[in-house]
Length: 456
Image (cartoon, rainbow, N blue to C red):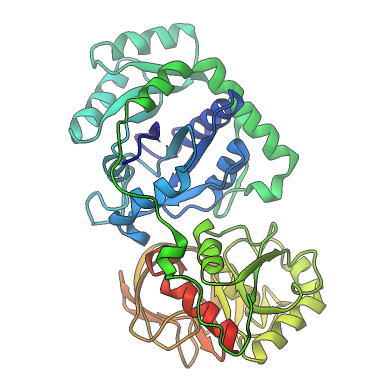
C-alpha cells in the first residue's frame, strides 16, 4: 500500500489550460520544498518535458491503451517513489479516451484507477452562470470520478470572478483558484503541438517560472495539497524494471555490459523513461548522444535506439553531420541492433525533404500537410531485434510526414486496427517503424534487444 498524496488536473476539453495549471502547480509545489512526482495521461512526449523542468524529476506517462490499465498504478508508484506529492496532468477532455472504446485511456479512467481526486480546469472566458451547468454535468456524469475542486482559467476581471464563484456555489464544488489571462505563460506551438523544452532553452525556464507565479498568485495551494492528501492509500507495489525483464540477459559472445547509444538532443526528444530503465536492467550501459552536435557514436556502441522527435525541423543540421551518418550506416550494415521509431525511421531513410540522411533504408521521407494521429493495434510481421513474429503490441502514430515505400520486403508491423496494413522495415539488425510503443507493456523487447547487442 502507498499513501502518496496525489491529484489529477483535468479539463472539459483541450485548450482549457491544463498544461499551464499542472506545470505551474508542479513548479509552485517544488518551490515550497516538496518532492513532486510529475505524470501525464496519454502518449504525449512534450508536456512531460515541461513537467521535468518544473520539478527536477523525470516526467512520466500513464497510458492505459499502450500499457494496459493493470500497469497504471504500478507505473505511477514507480515514478512517485520517494516523493511528497504527485500531480497528474490529464489529456484532452476528462472523459475523452481511445476513439470508440468507452473510457479506455481517458483521464477519468486514470483518476479512478489511481483513486485520485480531480481538479477541473475550466476556461471561463465568455461565460458566467453557465459555468455551473458545465461543472454540474462533469461532476454527475460518472459518480466514480471524484471532482474535488475547480480552477477557473482566463478570468477577465474581479467582477467576472465574483459571478463565476457565485454560480458555482450551487454545485457544491469548491473553487480552488482563479487565473487571469496571461500572455507570458503561453508556449509556442507548431505542426505537432508545443515546442519541446530542449529546443527553447532559457525561454522554457521563463515560461515555467511564469506558470508557477500565476498558480501561486491565483490558486489556494494549501487547499490543493489538502485535497491531494485526502486521496488515501493505493494498493499494490511500484513497477520495477529489473523484475520486468527478469534480470540481465545472458553474456553471449561479448561479456560485460554492451553500450546502447540512445539519440537525444533537440531533434530526438520523444522517449519514455522506462525504455532506458529496461535496457539498463537487461544489462546494457545506456549512453545518450546528440546527433546534431556529436560527430561520432559513443565509444564501443553495440546497439542504437533512435526514438521520436523533429528531424524535419533539423534536417539541414542532421544532413550536415556526414561523419555520424556514415558511422550509423556502417553500424547497421554490420548487423548491429538498431531500433528506430517515427523520427528515427526518417533519419534512417536515404533522404528527408531532399536532404541526405543515413541511407540505412532504401526509402525517402518528406513533410506533408496531412496529420496521421491515433492509437494502433499491431502484430510483428517479421522476426527482428525487438520482437519475434506474432508478438502483439499496441502503439501510437503522430506525424505529418510520409515514407515511400511505407514498408520493406520484411515489414515491421501488421497494423490490425483501425485499418489493416503493413508498415515499417526489418533489415539485418534494423527495426524501423512509425509506431511509437511503450516497452513496459512488453519488457521482453528490451531484453531481446540487449541479447542481440551481446551476440551481434
